[in-house]
Length: 203
Image 1 (cartoon, rainbow, N blue to C red):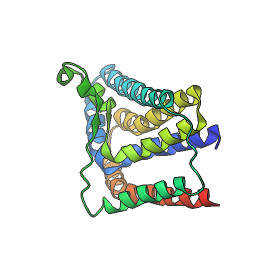
Image 2 (cartoon, rainbow, N blue to C red):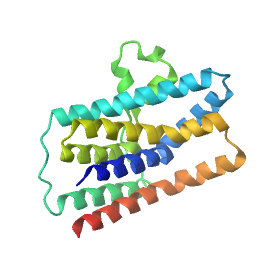
Image 3 (cartoon, helix red, strand yellow):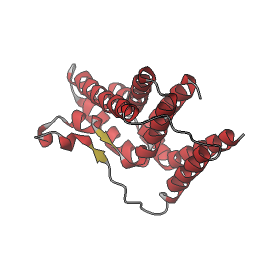
Image 4 (cartoon, rainbow, N blue to C red):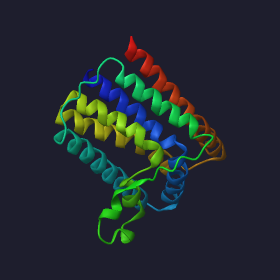
């Protein structure tokens, strides 16, 4: 496993995180509100979202790295884990799975008074948790603090990028239709990528 594995995983899974069903509606609403704000309010909101999300993801990866040793995965374990995760994504399309969001902002006193951008940035939505766990697993395997920082920044940046684009450009009717279709299709795309990675790792 190389640094490029982390770059690819953090980038692709970060981008997919925006389009997962449990995140796309919240972030679309955020972008609509940000687009309606006058300059520089829009960019300030986006900056707060990106900065807090980056601090969260980088902090979690560094903490995991500091508290663990590089695992000996064995031949089949990564493929089994990815297959199980893919199955969960497919099942979640037909059966509600009660996995809560990890709202880290609630650990801060007076969190209800924090700006919405900060609250959103300090939350890992339920359907993005497996994606982040994969990035975390790759980071621990590579055992590098520098790569942990890079992976966290990439995941947070690609997660936030679609929100930034729609905040700046606005959301047309065609864009709304695209996001609606994306929310339906993304879990299947995510599952297919996980199964593909599982098969690749076997060989």
